Length: 152
Image (tube, rainbow, N blue to C red; front, side, top):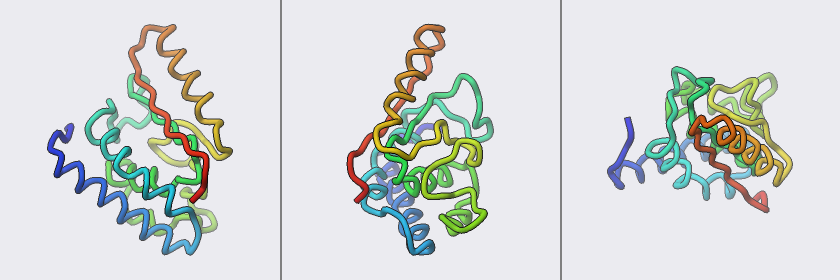
């Protein structure tokens, strides 16, 4: 279900921010600034724009999102949890040993993560390849990439 009401999208963005703060505070580690500044963008993408289904996180027809600034992983994790990819209680495990929610997103460990990222800027190339593949194969998949040049 797509949220079209601006006030509801603002509420989702605030829910994402709440998850970010709780996760980073619980971990006593992370990059809250870059994560918090992404909340509005992620709320609109995940709750209004993107063709996604949390029950089918690897659906070939889904739109893709690449977090090029991987250090803002708490924002992506909070968004995915609020979208129903995993329980929001998991956010309290951010950066803990043996947790799937590490400092940078890992597509092999977290449902809904479309690319493992970390080094600044690498995500743009990944997203470009995904978009080119979609275009060449006439699949109509939209690819979104969030970039940043700082960690704070």
